[in-house]
Image (cartoon, rainbow, N blue to C red; front, side, top):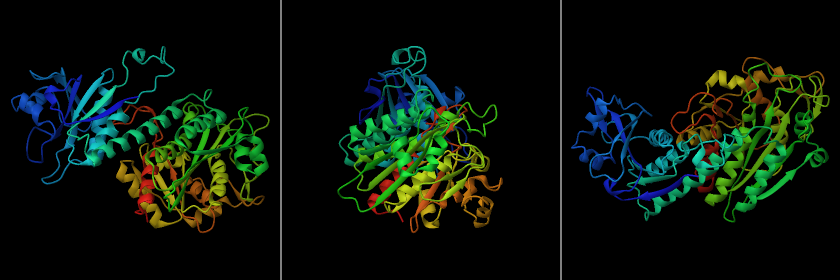
Length: 511
């Protein structure tokens, strides 16, 4: 786990393995690079020619570009790492927090194997301090637990994650700076725990094992936890969760995590899809679509992380997390296409495609969560490939039964640097889920499949309850190379958005 410190020390005298500085493309019409604020002392040590040296080495200042060079004479750190910030901002403006977050992440990843790095990036205020800290801590993440000697950090591919991040220019005794660092630590540690869960192979993370992780964390952080096993689910009438888990040797679970604050005036319910492995069930996925389906519990991982982060931050809002956990497998006991499930709400659903299973477990959890009359419900799920076709691999979709709340969720996501886009819930698509046998079917029209899934979930939202649905199918699992602070594999998508929603609710600034 990477440590974080704030420091006002001079870059030249700091004992570290590297000093990280920012460089940017000069404004339009000007040639060359410019050295970003925070690195003045480093530039001075190069005789004011750091930008020129970097240009000679081929640096362009492009976002995320990393260039290493020997530190100047007199520095205790042997290495300077220049990271690109993109275009230099216009006069009287500053680099955005997401730019700083990504740059710090890229630098931290490039410094794997180092014990300590000092980040001399622009930190004009506490928001910048938090962004640099968050980006560096997320960028330093690595999942090598299953590599040879993976339990020994010194043996992980020969390079352990960066051990310590020092943010230069941040004041340890400044209340706002300190609070920003503490928030960054809590949020990134829980987000990285979500990444660990997503990356864990399904033979080691079935519903029971996931529930056990949640129980341990709840005990550690004073969160009340309730786990419904298969017997309790049957007694409670959770037909959706039981139907999805019917074909697996690993029984399903519904986990309720309750963080409460004595000063809370609002209550949020977060619901996560937790399919620990999705084969598609009897409607088996085709070859090439199964290999990463351990990530189908990313929504539950995000909800789990967000609730624990809220507890660690002591937010003045009540947050209930619901983890709908099941493994979707084909077997003689599995739900078949054509079967009808009686859901927790009492509605019946004709299952026409057993690979449209996430909406079934979510529907039960949504109906149960709405019984507690929260001020808002937000579900998070790797729900549809259709959303990936619509928005790509880095953007999640937002649907809601309230336009103002959908906008508020979108703004919260943008604020923390998570790419998202508001999506509609067209009424005309609902007819496609009509069933001659049951109250509705679990699939509808082929086109607009992500919206159809949202409309299905809407059917189980309690009357008068404000609700939003986040389809994170695209950004939840990164199958390409790492970028910014985003690693290959599990990303922890939506964790920061959920935490921000809780913070805004606690402060009374949400809607």
